[in-house]
Image (tube, rainbow, N blue to C red; front, side, top):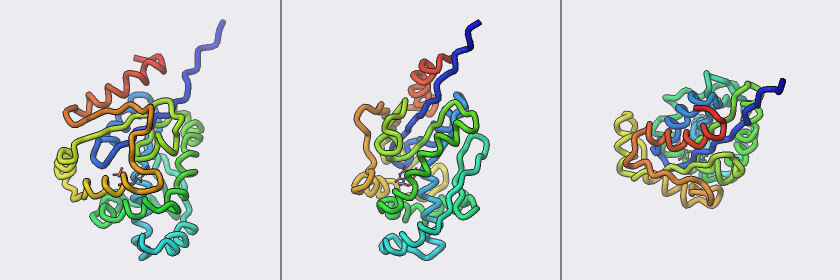
Length: 227
Ligand code: DC
């Protein structure tokens, strides 16, 4: 008797600007294929909340370096979501989505020392996913397919018209400077927001969430040999 084929562990990268629906679509993919879901934007947000709490500004890289060296990063599993603990605490959603964090996160995320501090942390989450028997991992962010996992099995880049993204945020009841964050994230020197060569570019402006998810799910299902 031959052993049943073991389906491969897959890495799915979803990059894109603010309000493109990365997190919603990654959540749906994680449920459909039993993947660990990682919202890397929440990590930059949590770090930003911590810097603000410590009174550290992005204009003072030495203070940022000092603060980073004291950050203890660990992972807490919440369903299929990987949540990052900083100093033993998961920063609550209300805090990481606050206007102060929305306004400051891109400034901290542009600092090479902040990105370096989160790089290995993000990569080791693939091992975390394996250890917890997930079939793979899906990460949403800005530099997943370009820097964190350039060899990912699937790399998607989501685009949306910025006016539509701002309407989506307003419907969620949040004040967010989508255009300004995209401008800062695209123009920074380290790991800028861009569609990496070879990634699948999806313009979501005229698509429903279900349609976006289906575009990504079809090749994943084919690779895994599942419906
Ligand atoms: O996905 P988000 O909008 O919650 O991300 C918040 C900010 O974090 C985003 O404006 C830039 C930064 N970020 C990043 O620089 N790299 C990532 N991989 C994810 C987020």
